Image 1 (cartoon, rainbow, N blue to C red):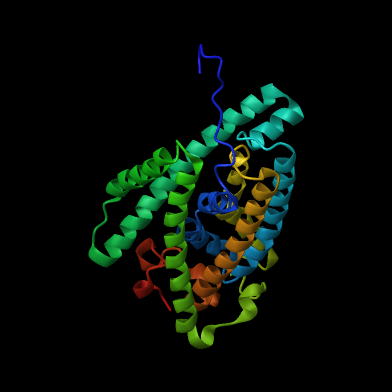
Image 2: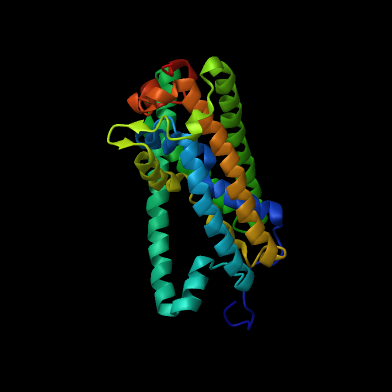
Length: 290
C-alpha cells in the first residue's frame, strides 16, 4: 500500500489441492471443448476420434509434468511468465506476458462467440429460437460474475467455477453413456485404431496427426493451475498433482464422449456430416443421423 510501507500480497495457503485441480479442469472447459472443437476434428480423424485423444494426452501429460517440476522450483502467480523471465531475462518475460495476455483475450472472445452460436443452434433446434447476440451477452455476464466473485479470495472463484464445470461435465457424461447403450451392435473397439480414419485426403495415420493438431485446442488450459503457486497449500506438490490429475481425468472423459459419439453416429461416416448434423449441433440427440 502506497505510503504505508506495507506490501500487498496474495493470500497464501488459501486454496488446497481440490481448488488447484478444479482451476485446471475448469480452464480446460471440457464440455465446451466437446461441443465446439471435437466435431471439427472428426473431419480429419473420422471415426478414430478416441485414438486421437490417447495420442494427445501423451504430450499433454509430459507438458504437465514439466510445468509441475518448474512450479516446484518457482511457485509464483506469474506461472509460465516467471519461468520465462528466470530463463531468458525480464525483457523476454515482459514480452511473453503481453503476448500471452493478447492471445488469451482473443481465445476467450472466440469462445464466447462460438459458444453463443452453439447455444443458439441448440435452442433453434428445440424451440426455433436462434438469437446468438443474446447469448454472447449472457456468456460474458456469467464469466464476469465468476471472475469478480473470485477476486477477493481465490477459493471462492475456483469453487464457483467447479460447480459450473461439474454440471457441464455431468450433462455430457450422462449423454455419452446414453449414446453408448443406444448404439447397441454398433459398439466396436476399432475406433481405437486407424480402421475408421477415412477422411478424404487424410487416410490412416496422416488423419490422426492432422486431427491431433486441432485437438490440442480442446485440451489447452490445464496449465492454468501454475498461477496458484503463491496461494496454494504445499504448492510444490499440489500444483503438479492438480495438473496431472486433471489431464488424466479429462482423458477418461474425452474418451467416453468421443467413443459414444463415434459409435452412435456411425464411425464409418463421421466425416460425412457429423459436424453439421442437427443443424450445426451434433450433440442434439433427436437430430443425429444414425
